[in-house]
Image (cartoon, rainbow, N blue to C red):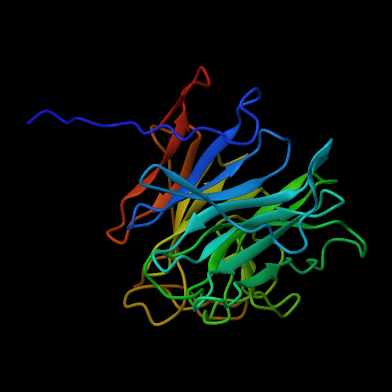
Length: 289
């Protein structure tokens, strides 16, 4: 039987003269998180069955329109309706967030703001921006963690990261609930358990499935993607190693890197079965899914 597909168009409601709208995440119920950027900032929605329903702006989001670029930018949604993404404040600085819908009629939603702590290698006062990008579909709340990245606009530099109180893999410098995939921020666990060496290459942690497996992207000099088996107690997966620990043997590395024909490869999402989706650039810089 030939494969057929149907495209459903999501039209921008705010400013049809300057269309700018994107669909960024979908759950098993067919709910899609959308933001309209036709007025310059982010106006968030949920799309389902042809209907756009407005989402509330983050309480600390800056205004949208009139030359300002504030607003709320949802990027992923779980089956329970939990949403993660980022908002831009009145000064244009981006902060990660999670949103839990009201538990009962008349109740208020629950917002949590995520600001990555300043890594020790950056000077005090360095501006850090945080974008949360992935949440497991079927796991309630955020117990497995939320993937994303933090960015140092002045460097410029960005690193993949995950925040999760329920995971055993955490940064030690500073001691916090974040694990960075940059190889340099954690002198104890970073160099042996990070997807990159201590060269400071930029990374992005893009997607996470219900088993806590993460996919992401390594930038130059690597220009490839990775799969990360996080947490602890996974059979056959190497335990956390430290600088003074025994050599890793008889176990699978936490990270597996890959690329399509050696081309720059961008992994964005992973299913519970381990299938990965994304895109790559060919030698003439054309992009293909």
